[in-house]
Image 1 (cartoon, helix red, strand yellow):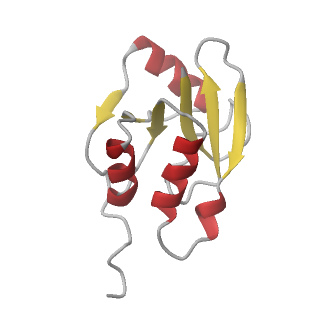
Image 2 (image 1 turned 90 degrees about the vertical axis):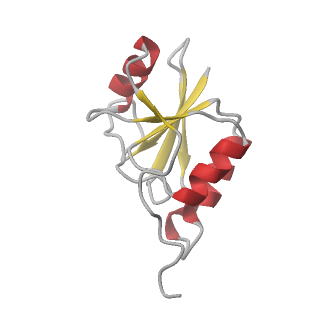
Length: 122
């Protein structure tokens, strides 16, 4: 299973980034082999719509699950439409979160964990 995790670094020992759309990297882990791929988040510098763009990038990579600390409403809509389950990260590194997911101990979230930024300045 391909699991994406928002990350502050490029290894399995990196901490989970507390943001989703503005995370520096995403690490896509094969839960069977623990092989992984690092994706630079091209949406990080985007003025608006970062969450939506980041979500689409991960869907294009064929992920089956997302683990992140905070996911805004626009990104959540994209994941819900694509039927990609989203789980709330626990404090720790990428590897810990993958292990917790495999044990079934991460909380699944169905709604945005923050309000996002799409209404700012309007």
